[in-house]
Picture: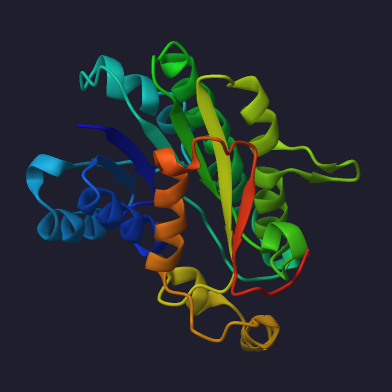
Amino acid sequence: MKKIVITGAANGIGKATAIACVEAGYYVIAADKDRLGLQALQARLPTHRLETHLADFSQPQVYQSFIGDLYDRHRHNALEALVNNAGIYHGKSVYDYSDEEMEEIWAVNLKSLVYLSKDFARRESGATHLRSIVNVTSVAGEVGSMDALYGATKAGVIGLTKAGVIGLTKANAWNFAPRIRVNAVSPGLIRDTSIHDRIPEPRLKEYERQEIIKAPIQPDGVADVILFLLSEKSRHLTGKVIAVDNGAYPR
């Protein structure tokens, strides 16, 4: 059975992706710091297809050892894919961030992704079949956000610089080739998530105004795209960023 690691799996897009992957026949290793959310996921999915880990990816000792522990302590011989979904959004001005919050958002949204990805790639670079990494970024990484640190960390995931889109997802697609594909999804306004509830009302209305498809995007809509990127159907895609945003912010 193919095994997939999903971070931030207790709620929102991560939860929807875990459910979709189990329904598609995968074995899911779900990680999150939300104990109750993980318990709810366990209650919903078959125990022989789901493994949960309580993990706070703001802590260096966690993100620096997590992948290695899956192989060495938990005896997983091979992992098929990694979905880097864990993320933090506070929805406030950079002026209002404490030093601790700054460190936390950099750690969860960017640094943990670097460590998890390279450790996964190091372990699976000799795999006989293609492996896959999917990074969950945000439209905020491309068009900006009133939460400057959220936008900056999400831009780091897809790699916006003055030279163009050359950052982490694309660089890792080169670094980890030819055995590991690396792609990203860039969600727009996703309903029924903790992030949605923190977006200031003016920004919500602006996101909604930009959408040219009016059916509200739910977490399972993003999960469907992630599942495609994990599957053989996307075997020729790497280094790509796919927007799931109802056509908002053409770019």
